Image (tube, rainbow, N blue to C red; front, top):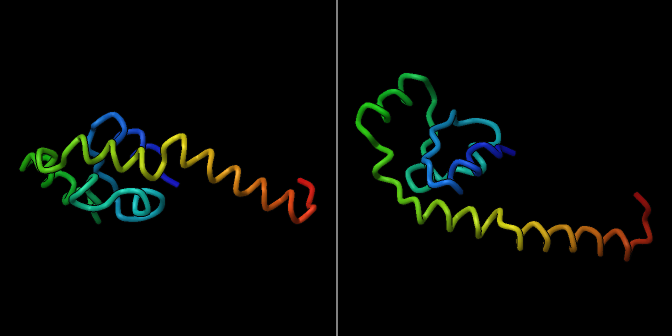
Length: 90
């Protein structure tokens, strides 16, 4: 899923990650971090200090809204209710 970028955003550190796998699902390019296709692209972002373009407050709000404790608990409750109503066992 890409937990490292989520932890980074929660701490106010701008993630720069490759545009594949979990990070591509959790980072909104240019808003909550940067997605790149190569090391050279990442280096260019670092050289031009692009991390200053990203708001730590926006990143933290994104994490809370999409990955916070309430979201996690609600998802688990929904899953468990579905299992209980279907009479299934784990």
